[in-house]
Image 1 (cartoon, helix red, strand yellow):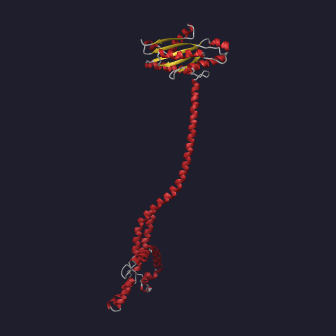
Image 2 (cartoon, helix red, strand yellow; image 1 turned 30 degrees about the vertical axis):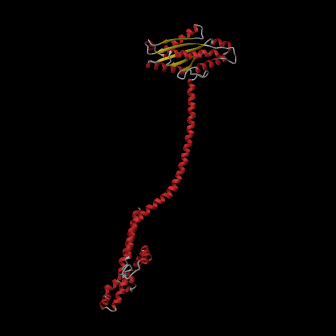
Image 3 (cartoon, helix red, strand yellow; image 1 turned 60 degrees about the vertical axis):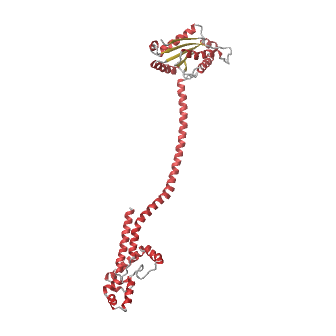
Length: 369
């Protein structure tokens, strides 16, 4: 759009300047002579010619300023250049005609006289050249102004406001993200608490039977598939029914809690202490040998008699233990079909401990053949 407008304006300027140039060659008024000496179009269309002169005068203002105000001060004008006018030539011929008959004849010729009164306005040519050179300069100037306007108005105004809005939005997003992160952590904590509550016995705070079934099933299948060792211990509090009858169920619950905490405290991190039901507990010990399993259970066995209760300082408690350790590399280990077979072996050892007087550890093992 810009280039179309610019080219149109330049074309109009060129037409006006060239019209002035060619009209001035034969215009009597250009030489300040009688209009009647000029051709008919110059007399009949005077208003149009004067209009061309008036408009072109404004268009030639930069060149006239350069010529008359700057160049004339540097190079003094002479009669031939740079101040060459047809009027000067006419004055010269008139001076020569006083002494030269041939010059008088040339001056008096009608065609020559009409041409001589015209004004050889070569500054018009310079003006046309000026606007021709100005065209690419306008493009460069416009690009420069566009960049300046963009940098000043867009970068420093619109962009700054957008940057402010973006910064506000970013800060809001950051605050929302922090809030969401806090909520996520709270939800994670609540989820962990909920997950633990699902697998934790409410009274004793050790793993419940649901977790025990899932874990023993998984460990049994893993040990059997990979031909590894798996140990399980069954724990039963001695004379717990009698304790409830004599001291009441509230005291029985305190004993259950205390026994559970002792068993849990002596269970390694890679083993799992669970409440099997009632006064029975079980400890799953993946990868533990017979010696390691007995050493783990012995700590609990030795600690239980040391328990003391505020309600009755004379109350003592103990438990019976049955351990079964299976190496699934053996044919006998591979013959076990499910974890229930393993539990039965451990339960049999627990029953044996009770028959042999309670408060003791019994164990069996299926080891390397």
